Amino acid sequence: MAKKILVLNGPNINLLGKREPSIYGRETLATIESACKKRGQTLGLAVECRQSNLEGELVGWIHEAAYGGPKGKRAFDAIVLNAGAYTHTSIAIMDALKAAALPVIEVHLSNVHKREKFRHRSYITPVAEGVISGFGGLGYELAIEAAAKRLKPAARKR
Ligand code: DHK
Image 1 (cartoon, rainbow, N blue to C red):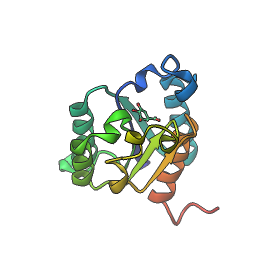
Image 2 (spheres, protein in one colour):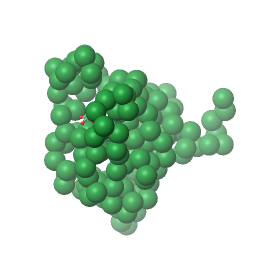
Image 3 (cartoon, helix red, strand yellow):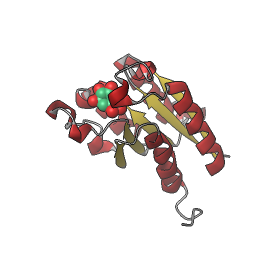
Image 4 (cartoon, rainbow, N blue to C red):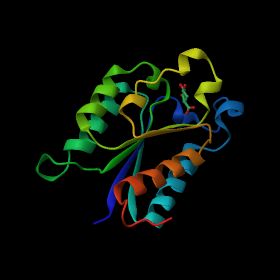
């Protein structure tokens, strides 16, 4: 069975294309999500994408990824996460990721380290496999690649 990746986006990411395009680009979330699914298909992975402006909903989806499968087992094998501004504030999301104990790839469209100081701190990074920041929508595809490599290290040759 194909491994499953859950791509989660947090607050304001639904406004991509309209929102501060000089920072976040003109690509819409729908375009990014379909590119993620295509990249997943190429790599033999099933990709599901969700977005929420609510912290608790993101926490619930992380729980579901880890424990919402048959017999309370995992429903997804890895999470690609852009938690938006919750990246810099949410102990609840960090704790949910710790509890889930699934591989997490953190993504940011912008290079957060070139921006305001409050964006330099991430509660996600300490529990993530790695971080991709500053490559716009491409970052999500790179994250899917990284997840594929993480999930099938032996099968993928480079
Ligand atoms: C997205 C947001 O919404 C911001 O709050 C983060 C991140 C950066 C991004 O670059 O994708 O600070």
